[in-house]
Amino acid sequence: MNEIEELSKLDVKSLPPLRPLLLDDLHQKVLKNLHIEISAGPVLYLLSPSYLVLNPEPNERVADFLAKKEALLDYLKESVVQSLAVYSVLLPVNSYFVEQNNHLVLARLQDKDAGARKFEVKFYTHSPGELLSHYEDKIYIGRDFIDIFNFKRKYFGVRELIQSLLEENEVLIDRAQARLKNALEYKSYFQEIKESVGELAVESRAALESLPPHPDPAKMSAAELIDVNAQYRALNHYIIELHDEVDEFENLLRFRKETDFVRYVTKYKKDVTNLISYFNIKINGFLSQRIVDFKGKHA
Image (cartoon, rainbow, N blue to C red; front, side, top):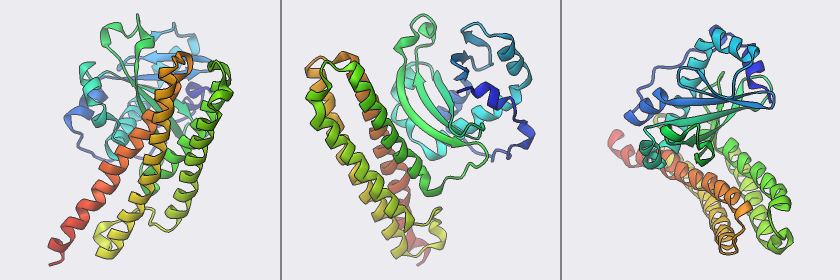
């Protein structure tokens, strides 16, 4: 992908204004210390919070982009962190590691529609003092998906997150052929995980079609609120089942010292764990609180 090439075509004035949003101290500090990773063809460039290229040496095209598109990069950073605050729990559930690293977070952007509109963003944290000398020691936090032309997400963004689990499972299977000593030995585990994430995808499509894309508790009855909450909770149960299967597989790989492959399973489990936390805190947590508050508001 060539994110720099695609972003260079955008004018920040054509983008929708970012809405005023009060960020807590965690998100404010991450915004201040956010490093961006962005590619130009096969080369991935690491940018400091002030858009200095830390690694590798930029060519003329990259230097020109950074000189001309600082306002666009400011907009992009703000959009990324606002999305983290509203549609994610990645920073709160990883706050220990983030704070230990003085709130240094890396945001690796990958263009998802070849038009610099929708991005997959992978997040890492790293010790500031060893960022360049031991870059490979970065800690994976999780991933998110943003649309810089449309901040508001249908169904809390659940469709994109579940689709990502489906796609990443296929990547996991492909990597197994090269990374495992004998991939066929683990065939039953791959099959169980594939069936589990496939069932999650099918059930989520069916459930979301019956749910309001943007539930507004102020306009919903108590029965509607309870039903929507129950349907999201039921979806979370499928994710929990997937987590248990991935966790069992990861433990077996560690026991058998499959070090070349187990890290990919650990990363996948991290995405599943993050999604469970997102349901518990941001979706069911939000809806449950509205249910509890409902009687008082309508008494």
